[in-house]
Image (tube, rainbow, N blue to C red; front, side, top):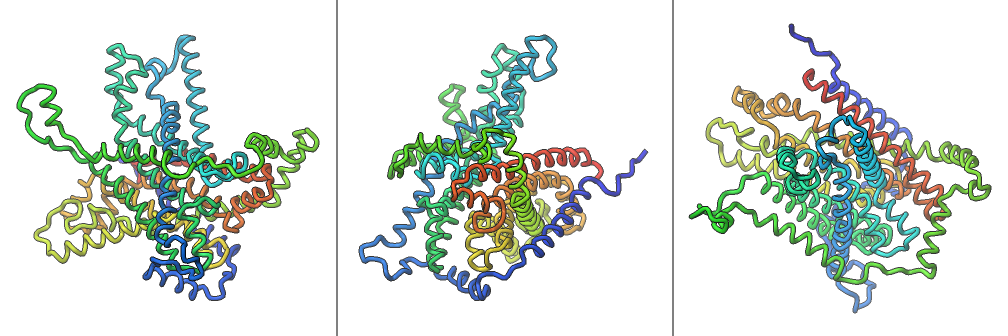
Length: 602
């Protein structure tokens, strides 16, 4: 008996829900934030800024600098090297911690007897202990990554001082949480056949894990580490907006002085470096997904001859060497990282900080019951509005990015934007047609790369100078950045997808767009939604910190309370944002389960 699919499946309901949410968010933003920009003529300001992109400065625009001052390019290269240095220092701390926590967040190293329902009392106790470790590690990494790295920097500088090392430690904390989450998922996705075989042969579960499953995960761990290093470079650049000497500080100073040609030079340098690491990561992914060819045929079966003829990629050891040498150089070369400028000792500073975290009425009365009216007043006066604005900005930006991403993704996929889509051959193709399709795909992929290379904070900072201080520059900045990230992720999903159905559509006379909509999109839809949920969590963190640019989101009040040393109030607004991240995790987990169950009805 044929089962009729429901009229409104979970996938259709999800799409309709997203569109309705976008309309509500945009109308709310239009009603609440539709203010005139501070600039008298935004179009003139925009023209002045964007026209400077055609003539980036190679010398200082400030003509009043002393004659013996360093040339502009030298200063910018030093700022860029500082940016790279802090990124490598942060990642050198984040990767080991991420590996350790990722190990604890995985159940694949547990003994086989504990991975199923326990029966005996000792087994139950062992399983309960491991579950407590597992849940504690999971909660820790969720908390670490739920707070934006710039907020961690503000917190760490409050009680450890304003040294570059403090900023690097604060950067490393959320990156370690993200690495641990992804590392554990990569490890769990590996085949368990080899570890099961070793355990049956007498090896312990931990030994089998490190001998079989962990080595299988290393290639994927490397590629994701490279991606996080790319993110760390962007975050390191943003440190300049809170006083750390990186390329972001140069951008801020040049823009505030209306030296737009210098700004574009600095942006081009930042984009170039980020694109360099992105290309390196894509090359590594390509090498890992392409079977290696034997260098020659072995003359005998000796170990030496087999090693000499075994397939190998030089790029992988070179990449590992780059990461290792870069980390060592970042720690050892250049000015000292742990420079402390304060007459107050760090211990006294830390004591004062943690004392100030206790709510003000509790410090006065020593009764925690007095904190409830204080919390209620913070929530009703500013907290509720700031939280709503944060969610509205994040949701609007992400949904706008998703809409434009869906339009352009098919034409960025290498298996679609080609004269022979999905490897289907329909006769001879002219050179002009080949060039046009190749150029189209290259241009859109480059657009995705450029838009995700500039941090959202920098884009928002530049747009506020043109459009004025309201929410729309933040929405546009977040949408631009996430447009590039979603475009890249979705294009990779299309390229790695099974093409048989789509190829059959093309061979049968359908267009490449029809083949994509009917053969690729339905079965890759769930995975694309996973990326939306993943980016929404990130957007909430980003919209929180963008409030530091004088927009009334959570970051605005975090920044104000930090400047007045009201650390108790600052902690309240931070925890509000953290609660949203935890709730979004629960919603996305439930919705993913519904989507997976309804896959056969869409």
